Amino acid sequence: MKILNLHGVGNLVYEDREIPEPGENEVLLKVMACGICSSDESRVMETGTYHFPTVPGHEFAGQVVGLGEGCDPALMNRKASVFPLLPCFECEACRQKSYATCTNYKYFGSRNDGAYAEYLVVPAWNLNLLDDSVPYTTGALSEPAAVAHHAAVMSGVKKGDRALVIGTGTIGLLIAAFCQIKGAEVYIAGRRQESLDFAASFGFRTINIRKLRDEVNELTNGRRMDVTFEAVGSNLSLEGAIMSTRSGGTVLVMGNPKGDEALPKDVYWKILRWQLRLQGTWNSAFRAEGDDWKEVAEIMKEGSFPFERLITRKYLLSEGDEAFRFLQDKSVPKSRLMFVMHEEADRLKKEREARQ
View 1 (cartoon, helix red, strand yellow):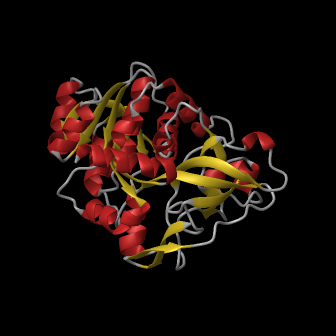
View 2 (cartoon, rainbow, N blue to C red; view 1 turned 90 degrees about the vertical axis):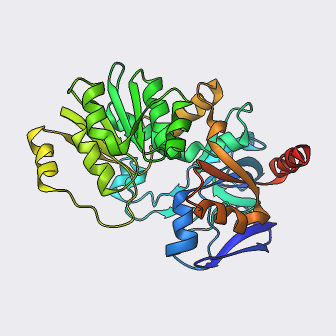
């Protein structure tokens, strides 16, 4: 089989590897699609993974084509996405089924080899079964969708609320979508006009972050937002989130910062004097109460949101260098990039031929 293997920072190599064999309670997944996340950009091009070499990739979907001992035979040939976190099952968090806060977890694509590969062995426990009607490329968006869904749930957003999402990336757009599904009046703020236009095409009201305070006050008659999501990871967006939220409201923080965050004193005071609720989150609930992955799978089956529109470009696994060059080109707005394999790769080749 073919893989993209990270041998060092910036050294992503397209190479061969033997197809692995599933062990007890494991399945062999024929990977059909794998998203290229902004965290992958950091790992591949800037910081590296926890060890070298490592096969990146943690947003993926595929078909079960092999079963290890102890697996349910009904899993064979099923379509599934995969919860990429591998819990220890021993710590206090795991005993409470709060697997995202496991103190000794492993993770596909960073601590363990991931899905920039044609096949991957995964524990059957980590499978999130998908309806046959869901495209593999949509299924590969399960991980960012589950993270966004978890953020919406954690915030307590409800019908009739005004919700602001700061950030026009994939997860920001998905948070906005789930808030809208819950009946909230949704606004999304960002810097680039092209990105704001893309957000508006989904029916979200948009705000230029440079005018955030003035526009929020005008749009809400000075009341501000009930719930604000910080989905960027910058000082500007964090300050904007706090200053945009009404007294007693909720600020949900999930942006992944590049460096240290610091607040001006008058902004920090607003947390105290407006009695704001600050909530942090980084992942999702899986195989527990409020399972975000099951909820997302159902939404994908229903077709109530056009997930496929979030995929900016698709690439063959052999086009890793080209994909990451495009990912790093900040002059071009983009949502999710995705590697496709097997039948999905054949489909991409035919689409390219038809455009020529």
